[in-house]
Length: 520
Image (cartoon, rainbow, N blue to C red; front, side, top):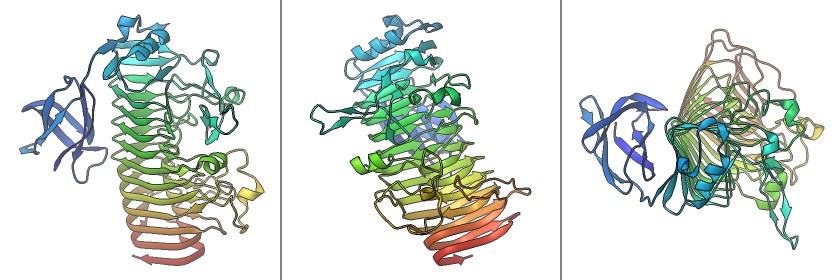
């Protein structure tokens, strides 16, 4: 235990990370000492201290047994006033529509101030944040969505400028400009936004409304729980987000975005309830999050072909650490709407439990030449009961054209402006136990092979009775159980100290791999 690192401060709270070697989402229990007094016990590596006074200096340290870390000084932010939504007429009775009262408090909130939602259940349709606002959900406070389509505004997918030289894209879905219902909490071209507290944002999604596929086929795209469009300096910390109509947290063309110490949960069979989906974003930190969702826990994106070709904004410098991913289609996913590419995606000190896949890369023909996926690093990760540990799929078949001959053929096609690339992937210090479907399943394009894969110090052990499943969502991927290493169409694959054990049906199956080495 080396000490603590301050990740973020508000006027009333401090988010810190315990610098404990070998820690993941949780670590051995410790005591937080504030100004010489013990204030809380925790096992979380990323934790929040709240109930503080504004513009005040505190000294923090942690103690475990007889060992105490060096103290760290931190000062909370200045606060001008607190606006309690009850003073603006909000009822919090779980019946009254409190949307207008909540929104008014946000709109009139002056700089360096916070909007406080105290304990209670506040029914609402949607809220729009503005620059400089801190929205705090107190412990016991629930923002409970009213899931009625007729009461939600629609964000148009594309509005052309008067001179036809530009466009405004307020609505989006799965990488394209598209009409979409406004999200529960939305920031649009805003900066210095904070959503914090111990309360809950409940999207009230279920199989009678937002998760009903038949209903959704007839309407604009579903809302997200939180949507930040072209925003800067956004932090969401402490809260629980559950039952989102679709993706939970969606930063879009935004930069300097932080998600800390959250609980994001939806039923495992709810569809498109991704946890966090940074799309064409720069400098994103995702730390101390407990995910339990019905789709990918984290999915890094950069749009489909139109957005990639027109704007060319990749997702860069995304750091995921000290998170717990439970269930979901993928622990950390790159793609599939990835037309502008990604660069420098790092996943470390995370634990995946019973996700369908661990690392999941998904792309396909048609994403375009700017869809260059590189700098993907997995380091110090634990997986338990994950069906397929590592999957790279260049034939992802979901979407309108996903099952076309152009996308699905395994024959080499001419390289053109529509051809994507998978560059460097590095995987180090990973332990995967009770694997089922496949350990390593990489399928590159024959005309654009996976450029470089390095795996070091990786152990994969299969369950005693591995369950059969499909490793990749692509035409031609046959169900398998205990598939060790399956690689198609790669230039350089280097395995060092990689161990695959247990009920392995087929240890190694290679084709189209130019340079291959396995130093056991």
